[in-house]
Length: 301
Length: 300
Image (cartoon, rainbow over all chains, first blue to last red; front, top):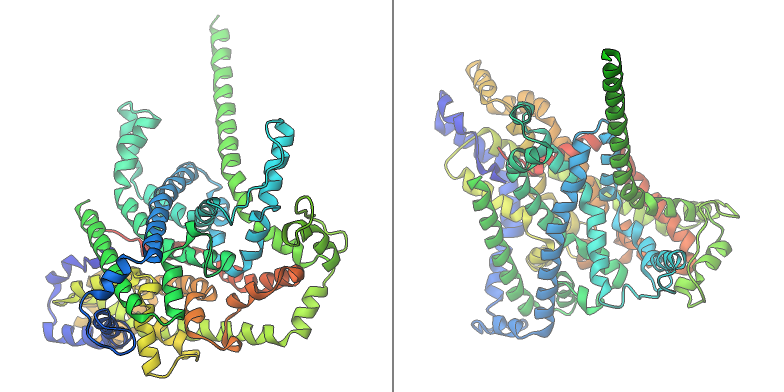
């Protein structure tokens, strides 16, 4: 994302005039910029305007819509759930990815295992919905597994947890997020680990650092850049969990997995554009702030 | 005495080697176990798609039909059959309609993204003009905004252009997505600026430089944009759900969940066929997929 950095050294080669460059830049960018302006930027300004108006008549109402959504039970619930999901999932994903990537980085057979971890990324959500239902329903595979485990160890009897209808649904969602995104994270961590020069680690070894000291003082500090990348991308992908949630549990799922995405969709279906506009502006501003903050942190490393 | 010590040393080396192997084997096992968990759904889809309906119903009844006991499964069906494939491929024309909808949407979006996005990525990578950094930052933010935040604004435009309930409503906004620009930018940025400068001194125009130098040398970014884009849009859900009312226009990804559990074999078979193109692209383009993931998180 620090991609904002554009060819620092390009300045040293300004044999060709700035005018020609500026013209070429504009011409190459024009189609995209026009499209983005027409399809995203202008309409978003319209949304900002609408967030201060009533939905049907378009009367100016000041910040009333914002007041309404902040007293709206559904909105507060959705914000809480989405925030909880993000806060639980991202550290978990980052950690799991690292735990898989470390041993993989020293292995010759890494390719195949990496492919297996990556494959869920390629699986369309719709294809696994039925499988998810088979696994997580009250009499599904997961409970079967736990019951069998209980029989073998003799510690507990039949397990009949309803994973989709109780608080457990949240963890089902966390699980499917991990299932889908671990491969992605592993690839990024691996790229980070492999880009650390070998000499650095060997030098530390020669100086008598053990395996753990190498990890603690050489590898981890060098992975800071990858860390920010992974956090941002995991964040981006965490919004796509809506697909699983919607397909498995519908528009009004168990209340622990009622996410902002559900709410926006339901508002859209019910044509409640005033609330939607206000909420879109709020979420947009919060995300913008979060992205900028992360980018600042990133630039510092 | 001396010989004995050497023997002991040899033994220790052999022991170390053995422990080393053991450790590798153990880590392999630790990594493979979750991996097996990951591919289990694929196995379930595969076996389910060739399982006889009655057999399947007996297995699934506890979970879906309120029967006693637990769901069951057999990795080798007792009555393997291709009836579902036959029914799906020869007797379900609606499946084909949706399949082609998906193909059409994905192809149009990817082609459009390349036409619009690749030159834009080139612009950012090859020219540093005043304001280009700020613009690029804006593009990055747009890339990270989830669909739900921009849903209303997209709807407002699509409604005004009276594109609602047409495939254009899905294709046009996706064409101007900034994600592929970011990926192609990763590929172009790897080129040394001296190369372009040398071409300029030799008298090449900017367009010629883009076509003759940029495209051939920076194609890995472009290809990874295609691979990641295909997987993303083959899985398209939020957009058609919001912007397409007519079910005949839906992509495949929305059709599958509509099939009831009573036809689980049929549904799994349809899942399997939906999975094929994605798996195909995954296998062919895995290197670019990985490259693309790395580009998407590039840092100096």
